[in-house]
Length: 176
Image (cartoon, rainbow, N blue to C red; front, side, top):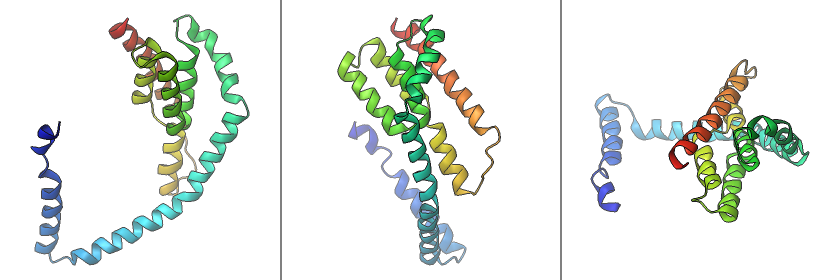
């Protein structure tokens, strides 16, 4: 593996050197601009903290209130026709809310059923193909100050649904 990677180990230093060389040629004070950019990054990170705390608190309340379990009970009859395990549906819902929680659930699935089981492969595919819609909206929209998300949440949830259906279909076709 390291032998394969060593062929490209020069790419990142080359890109960084090219950026510095370009800045020097254009007579830009490279170090001062770098420090200014780093400072703006720190300010942006501080600006995002309230949004991150808000989304994590909302997700925690949503999970602990039992709303996720209720959603699974309501939605499971619709997907049970396709013989989809309830754990996969729960994982898909949680993945839209929180990436770390979804990874924890995937590891629990591996412990309970094994990574080579149908549910293990489906959990891996779901975590890899789905995204943390609400986290992304909180961070990206919050970083630029967008308060009205308009169609972002419905479209993101639709994309999560499509990735759920595609994951089930692909895992069934590939692994049986």
